[in-house]
Amino acid sequence: MRRARVLLIAIAALVCVSALPSSASAKTHWLCKPGKADNPCDVSLNTTLLSPTGKKLGIQHIKAPRHPKFDCFYVYPTVSDQKTATANFHIDPELRSIALYQAARYSSDCRVYAPVYRQNTLASLLGQVKPTPEEAAHIYTDVRDAWRDYVQHYNHGRGVVLIGHSQGSFLLRQLVAKEIDSKPRARKRLISAVLLGGNVLVKKGSDVGGDFKHVPACRARSQTGCVIAFSTFGETPPANAIFGRTNAPGKEVLCTNPAALGGGSAKITPIQPREPFAPGTTIAAAIGLTGVPEPKVSTEWGASPNAYRAHCSTGSANALIISPLRGAPVFHFSPDASWGLHLVDANIALENLVELVRHQAAVWRRAH
Image (cartoon, rainbow, N blue to C red; front, top):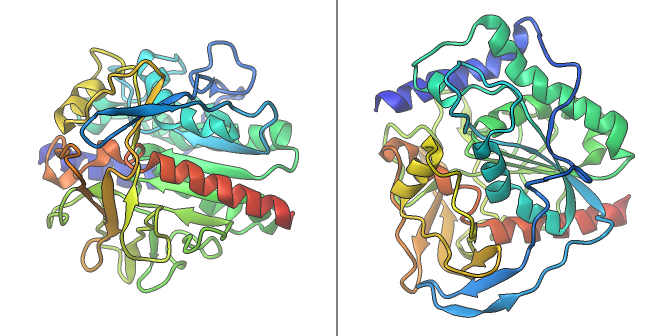
């Protein structure tokens, strides 16, 4: 419970860091970038299809396009095991693992750009150390400056999908609000924003009016310039849930079901890499507690088509509630019930998300 409270305080601090003095790096450090050597987002996409109980059904051979038609800009969640309050620019094993788990799959359709940023570390979020005002400021400005670098030197008028999870989503909420939402030219570039586990806010009963005035929730597959957002739970979120609830007057947390944007329930398909998350790291241990099985396959990926059913809950908490089908594994919260299934947000419906942004990108290209 103490960890949950510390995380909530740290997240609130992140929302305000841009008001502090900037100490951003003048040079972008890229974790993933087209043409980069040893790129964790450039991997084989071949996938073994599995039944919900793990029986092999066949292999799906997927080849990334030589010239992808759109871009993805990914900001990773809190993963750093560095013992300082904020991380440095070193590409530690956990950064490579999280990029593989959460972003690499999108390379089936887009060029993936992912900056390294001096994030709040796990030690900081757990209250073991505290960032200085200068350190807190560069958490956001690193991401902002990387985005500006990308737009100025690499975008060339292409459509782009923003992808974030947890701390990454909180930072992208700021980025969209400050760099995109109020700027028609920047909004025109946005295909969609996939902001998972980040409590995106909207006005109660509306798809805008919270974090963003002009960028709405995605409510149809062919809608572009919109936001896809959810946090995953295996049951109704508890009263102390960190995700899906807000105390902001007149606001509510946005939930969009990627398999049923217009509402209702639908089956979803999780995708998981074969490679274990960086062994010996804090996140690897936390993932182990959720009960997520490692696919025992020869391909880079394992996918279980339609292994879960998902719907957005309504009321005091807005979250994506998932239910296993046909013997699929039941996932467990970690580290406690207030977190829900936060650690599976990015992978539980990864096939649906990739297919959705592919469709949105095609719609965007026809309109531009």
